[in-house]
Picture 1: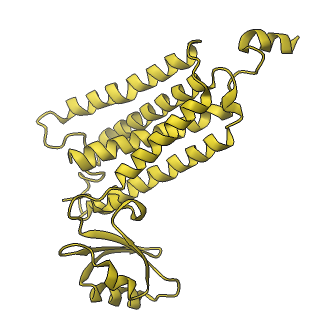
Picture 2: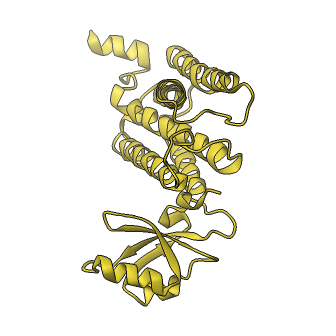
Picture 3: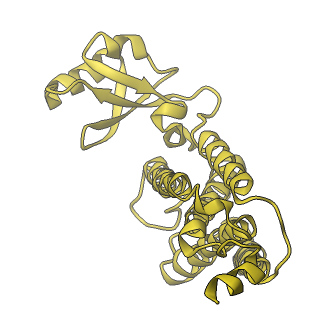
Length: 259
């Protein structure tokens, strides 16, 4: 009897499971963050993550950490898609996965608006506007509330026959493109992330940075951020125990976006 009911509702297969669409929320959330960071932090430069926080002299650090967090969320979503590949063949999985991604993207903008703009006050959408509340509310409604409502509506409809695996592939590609763009360095980047070989002491690392004519921005858990007056002089660092020096995709190039 149960099998018959399932057959009538889903063409012989069980409906899309919670597990199959859960990664969509994570990837949608990360895409919302990438969209925010790429458009507002990098391209338009309307604000940085902590623009309104007194005492923060190096906004580039926290913009970079923000993007790093989005990489982690997107990575968790991609792993979830791989683990759910069998469930994504079920009826309705493509529609529900896309709906979950829309809800996730909307949740990012709602969370950012409520926490960052209004409760914590660490930044506003358009800092130089004579009416910043207008931009905050417009962004909140258009990219937050509207995206959530669209996702909920899509989830409830019975239309949409695109296979779940096709939607998963599209979301995966979007996450990779967004993450790649977020990591692009600006033209004439003068900042790089450096990893030294295990066993390199702090004094040795500092001496290597000085020898490359660089200036230390910050250091944490073996990750060093360095700035030069000109282009990064990677070769000098590699000669002094550096394993990895980059201001592009692999090396968190988002740290280099700041004026």
